[in-house]
Amino acid sequence: MQTPLGLSSLCSGARRAIVLGSLAWAASTMVGCAGHARLESVEKRRAASPIVYDDYKRLGYALDWVGYPALSPGQHVTFIRPYDDAVLVLESGSRVSALDGTSGALRWSFELANPLALFVGLDRDGDRVICSRDSEVYVLSLATGNPLLRQTLSKVVSTAPVLFPDVAVYGTPTGEIFAHLFVQGVKMWANALPEAIRVKPLLIGSIIGVVSDGGSVIFLDAGSGSSVGRNRIADGADVDPIQSGDLMIVASRDQSIYAFDSLNGGALTWRFRTARPLTDQPVVHNGVVYITISLEDKVGLAAIRIGQHEPEWINADVHGRVVGIRNGLLVVWGDGALSLVDPSRGATVEHVELPTLQTVVTSRFEDGNLFTVSKKGVVARFVPRR
Image (spheres, rainbow, N blue to C red):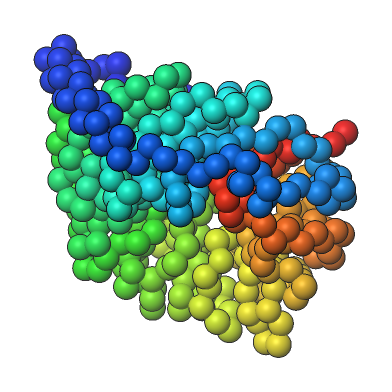
């Protein structure tokens, strides 16, 4: 399996230029940090983020550790990316942190830019951390947080990138999709849609699927950017498209879920109609899409098998997004609560209110560790109970 962003392949001339640019960036950023060095108190954050152990025991988890990524006053966590060896966190004030995956201890934090900078993505490439701003991309060492690379993007971007070897592909508010080549720091290819792109492109094998804010759908060859398929829906999407095999699944504001065949010119293979615009992020597992929908007189989490036109079930008591599966049960985060739902019947098995939390993610979809982020930026890792 290829690793995204093979920066080791940089030619010596490009590497020298990058080193010089990085030294200048490091120096300017360290000077800039002095004015923003004050951080939120760990003690206050801990007091405002209580953990009730019995709540998580009911859900089948046990607390492993609690960590405190650096948080500037008045800011909140915008991205969290958990891995076995490290947990990456980016806050709204542009400070990125790495927590130790085993203990939760803060390894390092680094202020990338001024607190008003808008970041659209946080990713990892092996031993490097990739931070995407609307106008720039930054690469740091995972081990130390030291800056390795800073490049200006050719256009202002509005989506997180799709990464593959030496390249990051972004969408823009002007409708352009372009590939940024890290070796030279230039645009490798570009294509365009007539409307802004607000949701992350989707990489399906060697094809990139893109949905515009106005409902244009395009499939591009990842190497050249040339179009290999097009389609259209009535409106755009507020949530990222997802993959099921060769299909791109799109939950749209036009009240429908679509499946497009990436290998057949973007042909529409399935449409499921609902009663309201779809604004909750869907997930797909074993050919079933889980998403909160409105249908007839019910609003709630639904299980919809791809190709079918009736849901397998709707649970009107649970709303939100499925973040994983724990011991065969769906783990659902929404409305400030975590719920366990039986995927075969849709029945709620457990429900716990967690009002101090901002978000919940898992390290992997099936039986992964559970990571919670409080509204005060406290990260906790819970492991499945045996």
